[in-house]
Picture (cartoon, rainbow, N blue to C red):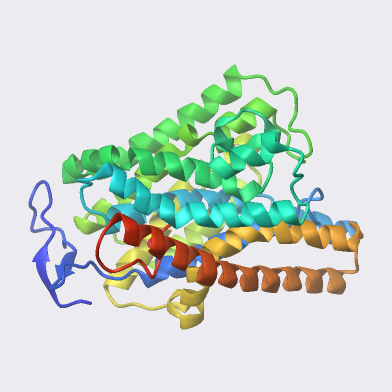
Length: 400
């Protein structure tokens, strides 16, 4: 992995920066920590959804229930923001300029669309989504639900799949954005990150002050209007900043411009940022507080992988969980809704509620593995084999 031969040349050569090099096969270092952290983010979304009364919230004790809901009240936002940054980063790390856009789009959609269809069918068969509501499941199937400003659509159906609607936009824009990022002067990369971050801040304040906060989001315990939530959280255009920041971050590290910061320090900043984010006004808790700590964490983990440092994220079990994390992410919501139906929405003692949560995690891991093994890999390989000659894709680069 580290027998490097040909360096990636920066836009402005500098001997002061350590440029990441490819090996004799033209491959960059394998970033196992980033594969492991996928599952951490996916289970963060699980805990967020399971803390909501409309989905599960199984604790009978008001004190325990309130504490559980409070701790994980932002873990969904944080995890999704991490997914967006990570998607941009991994695509920037592993990709070359796109010469055949249609072939590129086909390969990328092969990573996500079969999983979306299968999980949506499961949700319909199990009655989690009504077959009599094609206005909900239709956009879900087509991955256009995030563009529709109705809560029934953009977080209806299989709720986690709205994320894929944004990813489709990023795939579509990638050939253009990637060339632009590659053309940026190396000493302007961090400036670009902060400009994107400023764009995020400005967009949230504009949405907050210039859109109506009514009607409130129906069916969800969020103090925000339906249109405000759509514009500030699920609308794909709003999330493009995080994807671009991930792309730029990959080049920052490849060019050797990442700052000196240990994984321990960056993790501490994530913890501190998370605690602060718990007390930030609702709309501004989505990604503004955690953006920079997450960027530093991903960067320090990447540098650690390059330098041969290891952590629990590199353990074989975490690599396996990272591999199945897409399936876990996509199926967990349906399983939580089925569990709520099975229990009749009953609340339980703390030990019993914790056991139910553990069973839901185990079931989500198992079903995520089945989806990875029998849907994600074979469907992706089949569709890719029809679009190009060569070795089929046996392992995901990134879907989140």
